[in-house]
Amino acid sequence: MQEKHLFEYAVIRVVPKVEREEFLNVGVVVYCAQEQFLQAMFGLDQKRLKAFCNNCDILEIEEYLHAFERICKGGPDAGPIGKLPPAERFRWLTATRSTVVQASKVHSGLSDDVRGMVAHLYNQLVSVE
Image 1 (tube, rainbow, N blue to C red):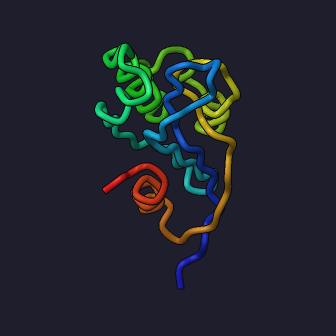
Image 2 (cartoon, helix red, strand yellow; image 1 turned 180 degrees about the vertical axis):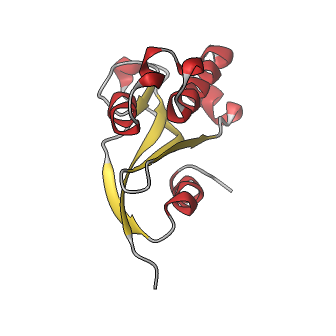
């Protein structure tokens, strides 16, 4: 039997008008210290986003979401934050902020397949299919 690993995750949200506090779940970010694993998955449903805000800058929002991916991967393409260890990158990504792209509160769980949890959480918390 495989060992279960403690993991943490947050939902990535787009908040077009921060002052209204309405948001659209667009992705997840998952971190597991034991596996040194950090990964984000997102999908931007432009039609749903336009229902929230018909004058959103879609390209800008997509760039912010791609920055989540780059920071998760780490390395020079992720800027100074990408040089930090995975735990610190996860904490930076999930820090409370008042911006158009935000993360939910951090939640935790146990899984014997942390990599599979990324798609599972995305399908459970984001996908509308």
